[in-house]
Image 1 (cartoon, rainbow, N blue to C red):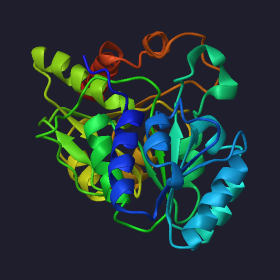
Image 2: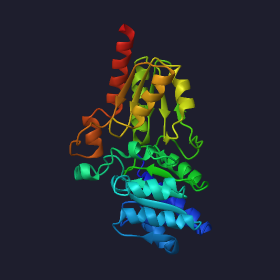
Image 3: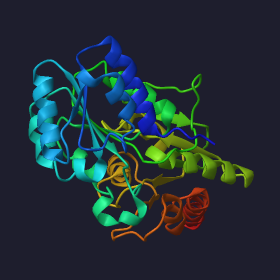
Image 4: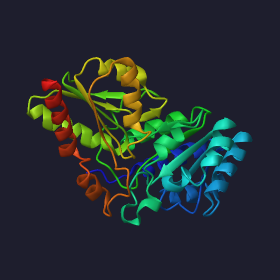
Length: 315
């Protein structure tokens, strides 16, 4: 079982690049520990800025540094970065088109028992609504590495959300297909498609394995690029399957499920099932306990697919 969280992969990429490129600068809001940036701060102290618990300042300072030619990466808990500093992300980063990557750590319900104040179940919807802001949810440490390497090569604003805990690998060092802003298609299947993002990709793959044993062929799409949404890949898959299920660690509004339904309604309407967090404060528990409770696991996804296929066969 992998023990390296995605946030650690981010630190490793940024540290390696910062040693070779003095324009790379990392900022955080009293979150170097939870962002796994302590080693970066030790090794590259002149390229690290600690602003304290001041997320709005964090984003504005990052934008100012980017305006001076720096490649700014601002890390802070996703719950605060996507809400408390929303105006700064909108105006200072997106509207001003500054080279700032906002890194939302401990995203979704990673903080578990701390409750709704520390959950970020709205960040996909909020950030995607900002013109010129890209939104990414990598699925494992290897894809996170590829994504960060790509972001270091461009100069456009982006929001990246990762969870707090290590997740089971989806890819490997030698087998991690990655093209910027292009979803990854995993497996083949004509019966159903599971569209997933972030930490939900692994259980989606496990659900496909369960269904395959029952003779149901399912393709999984890793839609790590929420915005720009890869319509080309999705529409191709949509036209090849009977039903679609989406799974996301997000509220039911404005996220992956909503994006999928919007495109499907326009291109090829068919039965779509959405699995997400509820429109309510979630139960208290660890990430696994919360996911299991709401059916956001392999068994729950497989059950949803079979339910949709049963409906499709009698309609």
